[in-house]
Amino acid sequence: MAVATEGPGSTFDLAGRVALVTGGGSGIGFAIARGLAHAGARVAINGATAPSSTRPRRSSPMKASMFACYPFDVTDEAAVTAGFAALARDLGPTDILVNNAAINQRQPLEQFSLADWRALQAANVDGPFLATRAVVPAMKANRRGKIINICSIASDLGRPNIVPYATSKGGVKMLTRALAVELAPFNVQVNGIAPGFSRPK
Image (tube, rainbow, N blue to C red):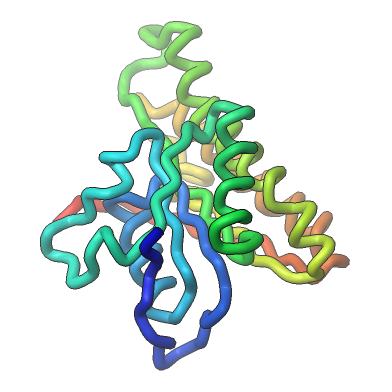
């Protein structure tokens, strides 16, 4: 299986570290995966299906073959468990987890079905919970680890037609804050990044 082979970056060195980025096949997720690879990490990218994890943008100087691909649905508990077990078998335990996978659906709240609400919360809140739960035991045992949750400007800012999304990202913000306190004694750092609006190039 091919993995990222870029050398250490000029700012910091992640050589020997294993990183997984959920939703890493495009957009913000792929940009993060590329940055981690440039810093020397062995990078795995995740998507719900293989094609979404193996089609980085053509403008990128890095090829999909430079990454390991682990296609599993972050909302599926059994799939998450199997995916991280495969990653540990192939590359070693996860040192860096970036919880980036998320969805949004813009419409007034009264038009949201319960099924749509639950699907959005599953992707945006259950996904980070399941992925984080999968890596925490090894991080605690090794007394090292980095967990980065991609929050949103909507974690703090309310806007029309994104109530379910804002609710989910507010939950991710508090997941981050509570986990940071819980895992600090084990030398595991948990941080959140809150991007504003972005558009793929």
